[in-house]
Length: 275
Image (cartoon, rainbow, N blue to C red; front, top):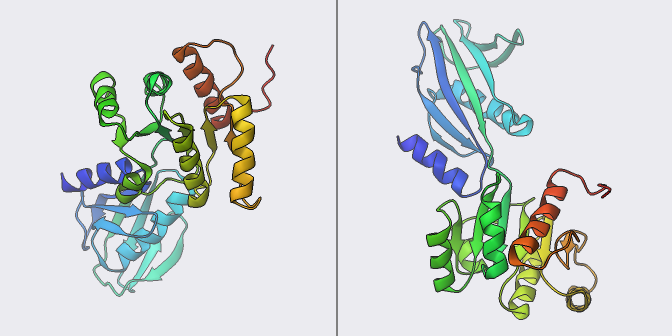
């Protein structure tokens, strides 16, 4: 059970991992069927598939799984000639120093987290966004400094949404995931601007940063960003005013327009022609 708890903790922290399981064993060898090991992108492991050079090779193949993002089964032969044979490719992989013989099959299972949406602010529009967003396949993280708002959201929506009081408490508990979506909709333009600056400094390579603001306010904010960062800020992914212009001014309608924009970017439909 410990290995599964660690798997859950890694995914909840917004990190990908590979679960490697011994699924078959013939003859002698250091592993047993059912042995499991978690491999993270930085090469760290939890658990074991038997140790030794077999485990070293498991880590190397696991890193390939990260790149391919596909599950696979790999069979190894631990021969008398002190070498591991990759049966699938029919070539010598590497000497192990083992003379136990037998064969071991490992199953590599890629566990990638869903796209992450960081939602800054849970006022009327923010709550509407969260309500509609949680029905989609996203990892949702809410950041709002108001404890009463956080409690209201947790009571009314679900525990699928993870909450933090501010961006500093967020960073203390988890890495800000690169290639994510960021929606800024707090109760204060000053707070919005400070969050936007922090995200730019973080250099988190966002897929999307959307900030609620009027057209006039958006122009002012973007000019201020250019001044503050001496025109070195990457502002191409910033959208403000936020959302597709599909009409409506209720909280739910605004939320749908914002999520529509997010979906458009997620599925590379920015050339979509509305008819």
